[in-house]
Amino acid sequence: MAHSWFYWALASAFFAALTAIFAKAGLQGIDSDFATFIRTLVIIAALAAFLSYTGKWQGVAGFTGRNWLFLVLSGLATGASWLAYFKALQLGNASQVAPVDKFSLVLVALMAVVFLDERPSAQEWLGLGLVTAGVLVLALKR
Image 1 (cartoon, rainbow, N blue to C red):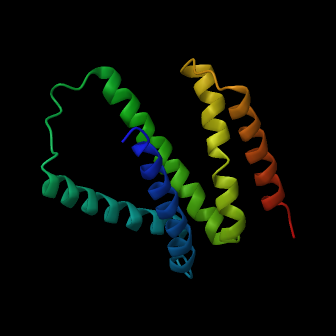
Image 2 (image 1 turned 30 degrees about the vertical axis):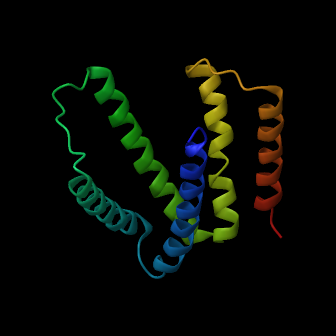
């Protein structure tokens, strides 16, 4: 159970891969921004059903101003990310767009150092460097 986060992260990667493939196939002949709106409606409906099924609805009265601020900022960042991702998928190859999108993990690590006072190890910095190199190799024109 100590590494259960890893299995959730693998599931996230798997579903993110499906997202790219399904989105690329579904974007043919429609506006990418409108497609993002449809995707968002599906996510809202699916999450509402999931929360109802699992009984995880909760009141928001106990949320702090900080909770609200950062959840709203996260939502805005998610929306901007999705709009950019769908436009990139519409214009480019999924096999090139997805690796560049995953460069976010390097940016997360850098931002975590600056804003969350996290300190990656030398091994983690090496991995981030390798990811950066991999993104560049995969993103370059063939």
